[in-house]
Amino acid sequence: MIFGITLILLSIIAVPSLLLSKKPNAKELLEKIEPYQGWIGLIFCFYGVWGIVFSILNLGWISTFPIWWGTLLAGNIIQAVLGFMLGFSLINKYVLSKNEMAIEKAVILREKLAPKQGKLGLIGLCVGVWMIIANILFF
Image 1: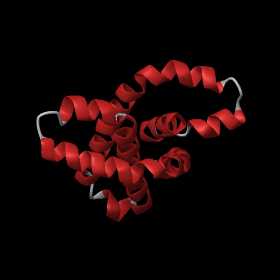
Image 2 (image 1 turned 180 degrees about the horizontal axis):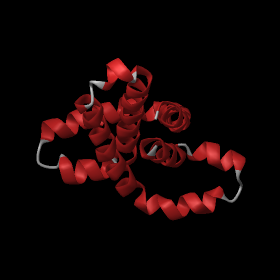
Image 3 (image 1 turned 30 degrees about the vertical axis):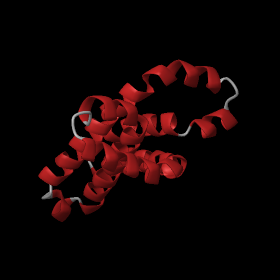
Image 4 (image 1 turned 90 degrees about the vertical axis):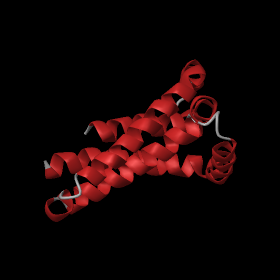
């Protein structure tokens, strides 16, 4: 259930235009979060990568809980990608700073993913809600 809740929180941060259209005072809240957005993204990126590793380590769940396992893997992939997109500047600064080739590849990947951030955030919201529901249904 924690994976779903964290995915929903990350998706809300990743889709600010959706929040601004629904709540007029959300702009003030988003401005307060903006200085920390890189750190939030960095943490969620590593948390998403850990979730992918966790899914692979629990590959045996495919035979007993195939829907839950697929949901867990999909949610963590979305979380890792959204975290990467939000924390790109810090990842570039702290993780990839010593390897020029890695920086170039990361910039190319970021350019490909940037236009899809809003859609991915909406998908993340839906998958996060489904992760909570699936956790209740299957466990």
